[in-house]
Length: 411
Image 1: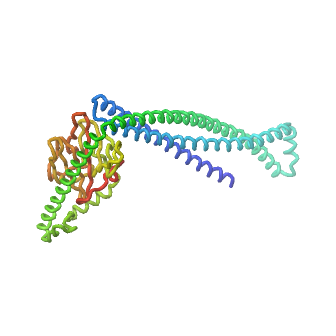
Image 2 (image 1 turned 60 degrees about the horizontal axis):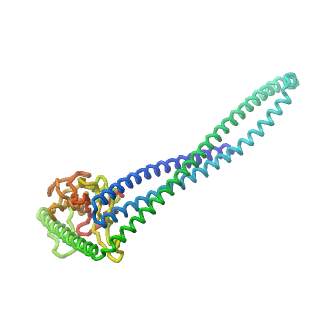
């Protein structure tokens, strides 16, 4: 029974150690990715400063850098917890091995003493010859062989335990060193985070000196955004009406009355239902509409990063990327419409059943209405403004209802 519990303990301990090691590796990979993003973000921030761009742009970049630095701190905190658990488990293993070694050594010592006392060859022969019969003599010979074998086995077990103890001591030493490195990194990142927050405060003070100018700029951009949103919804409503009319003519059914709830939704064919269900099933798993980038403006109503009394609205999500980047379809579908908003702002609408994804701020488009597109297919080039900033606005709608793209993308 004791042997069974030893095996069970060993199995559980090995499983826990493997899980800890696997989690530690994942955290290392996550930390490396965040450090890469921080490096890229710092490069973009330096580029912003060199171009003497709007302070608003610098604040946006600084905010992103602070968020990445906070993520890195969270990751190193998790690493510290994992390493602390590893140290604790290793210490438990060492304590157990030390107890077992103590018992084994004591037993072995007693056995050696007993063997020493009966080491005389004559006494061993007499022990066999004093047997009452042949069977007893045979059993005594076997006993002496087993006794010698058991002594050898105990000696080997002591060696094995000592080796395991040495390995555990080495692991403990390595874990403690690694934890110390992580703690030093954490302290360094905290100092960097504090510097970045101070820089952001400095930029905020600069912009507050000319509050009216920036407030007017924000208001203007918000009005432009609302006008574009209204155009998007009208285009989709018109496409829904046209599609339902075509489907009704083919099937001989009645077109839903204008102004009703049914009229504002796609009447899906069997193929359309499959496309819609497939898109819905991939919620939270869709690839980004760019190969590389970060969310520079989240979805929905949110306070302005500087003027907290001002609320800004975003119907989609804005993703900053590298100049010259291409937009790509987040899922397979059919191009519903290509809209020209201005010379450097074109939009592509892709239909996935009754879901539509919209890609704005494209300076050129490489697809056309009615074309079938596949997942991650390039659909156009994102506009890069005079300051070298490239931002794509991405929307997800179901019929004419705007949804939060962040819940659909693999964030």
